[in-house]
Image: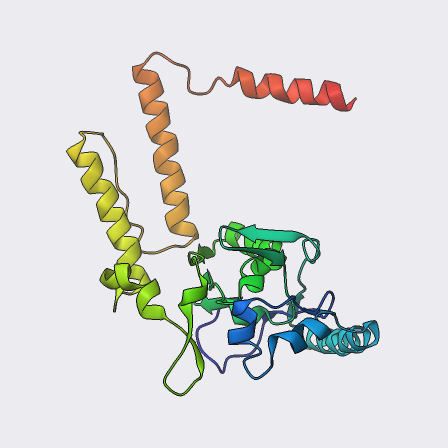
Length: 260
């Protein structure tokens, strides 16, 4: 899933699904961001799931695409739609999810970082739950997984510019976050690290800080060996047998009893 440029050979991809695709009951976010050229009453009249025939035909095309990619050696993921019909709710709205058709809209892959990017459309704010199993597996493989905070969007945030084009009033939304302007993701993560160290220092809380400059198998192995040796030495100094793990062995024995 790593992405470094736009021209390398495709190796891994999420292909969406047309299952549960619908036109949601209109709210100000869908009207302003998705259907600005239509009257609210018209959207209400057509709201609901698309005809099953359309969904089936679209899924057939997506299946052909998935199989073609697989035949070319590409690893293909598909969304988990178990939450598609669930009612979702935030402090400012409630409703149903929209669709799982376009994973690219709400996710950004930079190098080995998965970044969830919230949508200004309320019905899409929990859409990435459909990709959570995929992201979890990639996280366990060593990927970074970041989720941008979901903004609290009120009716007043959806205004029209001087040309009558719907636009989010971002100045109001981000007015208290000017310190993030022109800051990279690395700048923010480093600042959080330094802030943690500063607070611990002020409160006289002992800590150790590690900076891993190269994330690979060799470095990870060195860290494991370091902590193993440290545990052995500390245990010896406390007259504790570092090689005795009675609880671990007892749990193994108890597990075997239950299984037998």
